[in-house]
Length: 210
Ligand code: C5P
Image: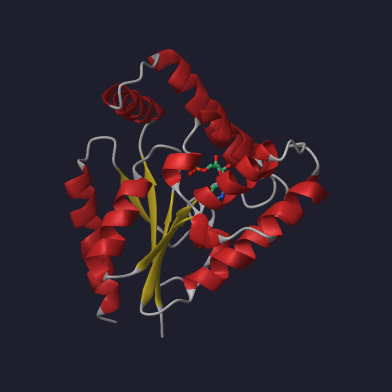
């Protein structure tokens, strides 16, 4: 039987990096479910379609190819914003969750990261992690990331964006961002990625032994 690791948390908490490291260490398939929302949003924008028509957005979501997701192409700030707008639409979520569940059962195991993996997509996952950090720390990490990629970013603007995105993701009625009751909390505010990985590994190894 396959083994699924569910990793949730707010934007820029470090769950993407942690998920990739975990997937690599255990030889599991990894799906960044944020990319499914981003790819749907980008397809709408590219085709000149509206971002506020649920039926149109759901049609696009249903035809999404999970094989073609590329964070480099989908990382733009505007795509993240558009993604969080269409992510409030129940029929868009239904279509993408179906594709995510089909991915989750791949052998020998999978790591899915997002906002609702432990609560909605894979509630039976044997390991659930909720990765978070203070909004200030997340904004600082995002700024450093942008700066080291040669861009220039204003801390206050990034912080305001993060707070707004958190509100939209936690406040929506369908599958809001929240920690599942049985998820392990990893607050990375004062933790390096290596420390977060060691903590995650201890939890996963204990669950694998069961
Ligand atoms: O994680 P990322 O920033 O790429 O996600 C983009 C947006 O997609 C999030 O702000 C959120 O609104 C949405 N999302 C979601 N459920 C997921 C993953 C992402 O609603 N499982």
